[in-house]
Length: 112
Image (cartoon, rainbow, N blue to C red; front, side, top):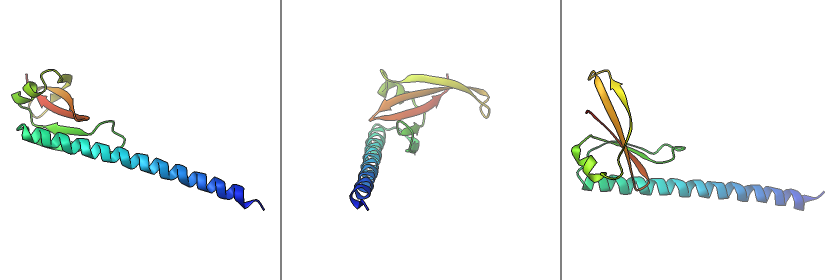
């Protein structure tokens, strides 16, 4: 019986599994650190936060904020239109905006 080969194969599998787990934890830690830094930066600049989303599989954490003219000042070179949609409750067109800070997507809606 050749136990050295099966033992080695099992050890290699374990190492690969542990390596993948460590990489996933490092990725989650980085996303949490970025989200925390961005939330602090937004609050320090007087921006009201609606929600923060850190779902796994999303490329960047997403923070939804209350629309304000201040946002276009803070993100004067970075904000871009992300589209528009019809808001049934208001009966008007709403414009979607997105900017990136600290590796996070910051999103808001505004009326034109």
